[in-house]
Image (spheres, rainbow, N blue to C red):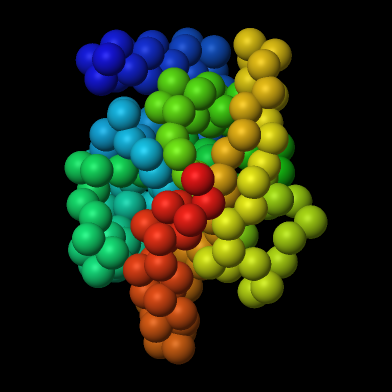
Length: 198
């Protein structure tokens, strides 16, 4: 099963490259950053876009924010190998700027297909950009750390329900020490939130 999911994710990656999604982003990026972790994961984390280190290594969340993410996973008794981590946009925007609405829209079908393949129990959005994908009217300051059930129609036209848990982006804590404890507190509660929402 895991091997089959890995193959499907790899096919999806090739499809993004072949379809020339966001060619101007692709041209200035080193490589496509698809995702990392367990294709059978119960939890998928979604950030916004790769940064410089991610672009160089081809893996999501390997810079300073990624180190903090690893710390928080450890605090919640999880490891990167237990979860799957990806971004909305799969190429690094130049100068680490925010991804544009049209770039996010271009990658949406591929993100949904990624989630369809993995079929997690919970989707954890990291930061405002990925939260807005699923909960467009929500304010992260009000909803962080709370689970919301969301119905989504995949390309197979079947309706699927996800548990969405919005969290602040780990990078926010790097610039604001007060956010650090908020993020850790939210993170440590994630396994219980998922258990209680079954």
